[in-house]
Length: 383
Image (cartoon, rainbow, N blue to C red; front, side):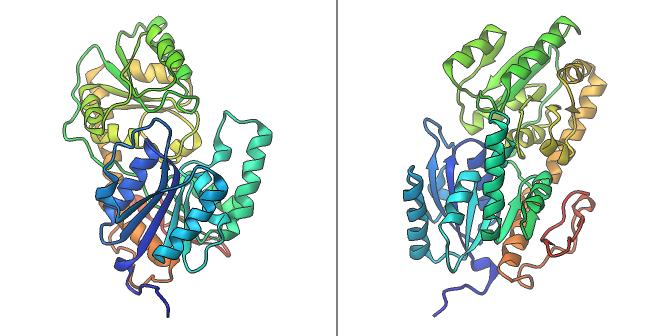
């Protein structure tokens, strides 16, 4: 007898991630919190020495540990699917996506959110990136839906051969309760893991140019931690490093600052930018394709341009205009927008378009962009 549930609001979702911690945790938590009518389960492994910062037991019906060994992880996914009979297995991150699709699941639809494809990494050789691209292309046929968190991922997914793609915006799990205010000297903050991806060296280039060439005098803070040697280099260059903080303290620190600076070399749709925007914090963001696709305010194509962006924000009229742009961005990435996108995407991948009706009133920036031959764009994206 079939165990398939017939109402979209009774769907059972098994979320799988091998990289629980930081942004992945926040992204999954936001999706789950936005759709409480669904039955959410988690199979995951936290990153080493990384506090997830989230009460997972509160969000999920069940939480199970994913083994570190890839072969054991595949077996664990198969076993959990037999136990739960989920309607959808939603894999988060490239490694989890490979594990779930290699498992060859029967009876459940596979939804895959890469949260930045592995081949987008710039700390890998060209040969390694080509290998990851080949793996993604080979596994595309085992994916029922690629659910992107940045519009740029849709174009990449279609190029990899995915037949069905959708976009659901990321959003802050806990929007800021206080709004940032203008003051001088500016307090400039960055956030996240101090690592190659976040490119803290680039931040130091921006800082040196802003100070030495533009005369900017500001306080600089990195909210997060990393390798001790990297933390020491930042501190020696005049950047305060807080170490890992709880979510409430991060939001408080953001509201106390004047500018959020983001210098990542590769990224998907980082929650830290959206958290800063929800606090009304002006943004200064390094331009890379995924962030360009989100149409973020404060994008700049070079370290020099970012430094000038920071210097401009010393003027109150520039600062308040930038704050308004940040609040507009935050409004586009709301809980309701994410909820509608997820329910529609999940419902359609299960053939339940009638139950998961596409909302009749969507903001103008969420209009459908294209329907490609032999491919179905499940939900529109910002035009």
